[in-house]
Image (cartoon, rainbow, N blue to C red; front, side, top):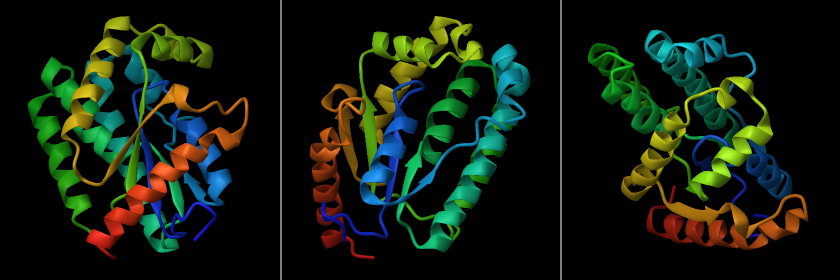
Length: 220
C-alpha cells in the first residue's frame, strides 16, 4: 500500500478521447504512486501518418498494429505483477475506433470480423489482466479541439473536425455501457497538473475507494 491506500499491484487505466490529456495524467499518477507506466506506441507507429491520409486504406492495419502493441503491454504488466498506470485501454480500440470505421465504411466487415476474433482470443489468455479501475476523462468538445491544436500534431490538426465530433460522441456512448472493470469518471478541470501534482489527491482518493470496494467483492 501507499499513502493513498492503493495496492502496489494495481493496474489503473486512463481512458478518454484523443487530446483529453491521458498521457499527462498517466505520468502524473505514476509519479504520485511510484508506479510504472504503459504508453501506446505512437512515435514509432508505421501506419499512423498513412492512416490520417487515407482511413479506408489503412484503418485495419493501424488497428491490428495497436492491438498487437497493447497485447504485448498487457503481457508485460502481467509478468511484472501489476503496479502500472496505463495510457488508453485495449477496449477503446475494439469498441470505439475499429467499430466506428466498420460502421462508416472505412473498414470492411470482413476485416472488422477478423480483428474482433483476434481481440476475443487475446482477452481469454492468462496474460490479460483486467484493470482494477478505469479512469475516464471527461471534458467539453471545444476543450478537446483546443488541446489537439496545442499538442501540435499536424496530422491531427488537418483532420476533418467531423471525425473528432463522431469520436467524441462515441466515447460518451461507450462509457455508459462499459462494464469490464469499475469506472471513475473525472472531469479534466478537477485537477491542474501545472499548478501542483497534489491537485490529484481527490482523484486518487476516488480511485482508492473504488479499488477497495471492488476487491472486497471480487478479491484476487
